[in-house]
Image 1 (tube, rainbow, N blue to C red):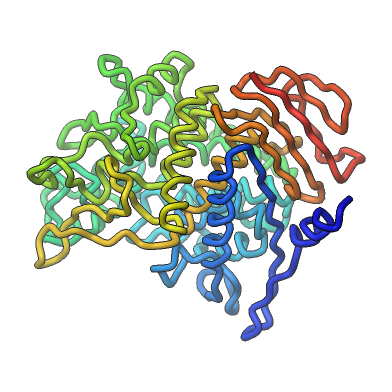
Image 2 (cartoon, helix red, strand yellow; image 1 turned 90 degrees about the vertical axis):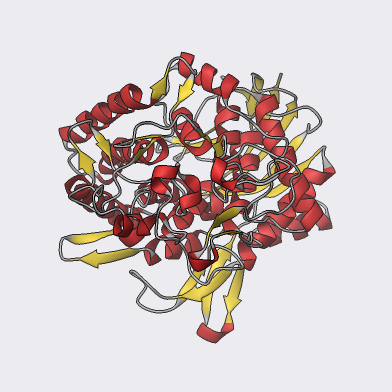
Length: 504
């Protein structure tokens, strides 16, 4: 091993300190080197943005200030969905203690037990369950899994009582967007306020009961509830706890409801939402990604969605098409949450495309997001779909009416979206309760791909991928040929594992 490689190895695991509180946390950065210099440099920017947003914070289950991931440079707190998605994207691999603290900071103890903090942004808070499960998969932290299991059960029970509608088998609540700019005109009247959470105040004749009062049902949100039901039995199995048969029944019932109410056979894609004002056939990119990643879509539906999802020059828009109330002469104006490109959604969509072997679709998002970061030297919160420039989009703002908002700099889940593309797309990392496998997807112009210092539990992987494409032709573990897609179990006697894969 050369001196340079020795130095790199030492740097992959170091302790960063916050002197004011004597708080320490471990950083284990996987190192990336590909045949595309721009992708390599963008990866360094992503790691810098991620670690640059670590700060002391105290809330939820944190008894004292501890290092957490803030939502971005322009934010002073973590957010529930950001905490979960960042952990899932790989922040729990890079800085596991910080990711764990962040997940704990958005959980509180209630009389019925610990559950996720949703409050007035309750609708997709259940994504915490998916983020927490992946944190366990990456780290093997059983104490945290015990907490996550309790939070998952309590949170689902609470939302079943307040937001589940037995009439159609769906959960009420908006999609991922907290702003009215992400919804049709019927949901735009929030008294001039930007937050969709203000809608019930100004639409008393339409509020739903019980629960918060927003009657819509969104594809992405219901997909997250489905995944939470699916994960409960897996959590129980890992803990040796009894599993309730009702969990599987509820998951299947919800999957059927999603198919019935959201699939638009004529359009060949899933709807965005349904509710008392009818359906919206807009394309919700995050919902489409989730139905592919979670296996809700059939193989035929997945192929149709991948073929029909609109993708803009700068990346997949969060919602398409936009809404007329945000259009301006020239065709270059878009709502903050409709028509714009949000990197955390790009990351999910790119991962879904890679999972289904669509290298060109995956590559478009990968190269566009990397190019934006290289141009700006950071990962911004939102981009213009046509120009790729940093762009906050139009949205209502109190008495000001519809105005152009700011896109925040160094957004954490934008940086981890790129990390997701690298780890779960290029390297094809798949982590399960049994172990690790790899199914790479390499677009043209990237090969070879090398990742070293990839820490998962008490194992360290180095991964080399040669060739272009998403079909594994050869798979070797420590030089020995293995069946493509074979799982490397957690109880493998080797703690350092070298994986070499050839794709075509």
